[in-house]
Amino acid sequence: MFHNNKPVFAGGVVLKAKMLDNVSMYARNMFDILYDRYSDGILSGVRVCIVDRTTIRVTKGIIKFNGELYHMDTDTCINVHPDRETQYLRVRFMEKEMKLDEEKLEALFVLDTEETKHDNEIEICRFILNEGAILRNEYTDLRDYATIHNTINTLETKYSAIDKPTFNPGFLLEFGRTMMGYKLTNVDDVVFTTECIKEENIKRELIECYISKRLGEQNRAYTNQEIYRKLIEISEVAKRGDTGSGMQGRMPVRRMIVD
Image 1 (spheres, rainbow, N blue to C red):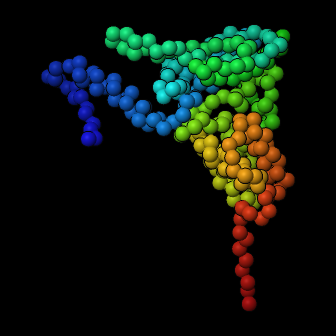
Image 2 (image 1 turned 120 degrees about the vertical axis):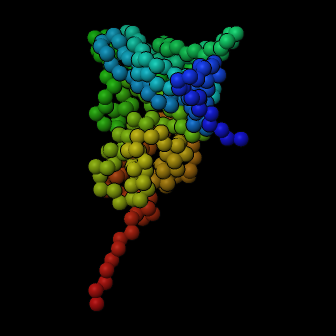
Image 3 (image 1 turned 60 degrees about the horizontal axis):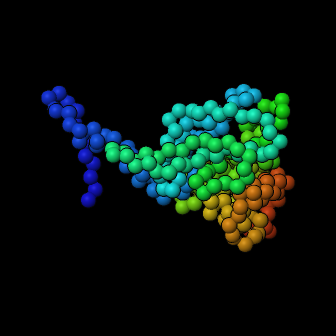
């Protein structure tokens, strides 16, 4: 049955362990229920910021792995160093530790140059830091998101969404803002642009369906790199004022005939 047991903290009421358990378990259970259908990946926060030439900061947030929610309650600073190879910042999830009074789940940041990701890791970002340079996490345009030299690259980062991981929300937001600057005549463009600027994690199926329909391709699964390249292509088509695949998707033109 459904229930909502609220402890009453009032004068004359004896504080019981069960009352405290109800308070602590309520928030945990609500999170588990709300994000039950969400995939592994970054759920909220966990953004990479630049502190100085040798330090980056990862903001607090929530990440999901193997169905479990991991919370980071404070920002974490990580030291970086120049390297000719690509460096990968990942979260490594440790083995579950069982204690008498708790089940302990922990994850830690790992920065290395190993390209192959282990099964117990989720990538946060990648970059190549040149000697004397400083990393940046701001982008000049959509194409700049693919830059990796002295730039935080998050195109391969896994973001949590319903059923399966989705594509970079920051790039999608920038895509939406870019598209809003054009005169859109394609209904699909208008609808998808609206979804992008909501700043919510968009389902991957919606992104893939939009791309395939907009470019006249067979609907299929796309890799992150393919999504990036094809959204760039769509933005350039919209900039030129093309409607894409024929007249399909063009907004109807209303005419009034006066006799």
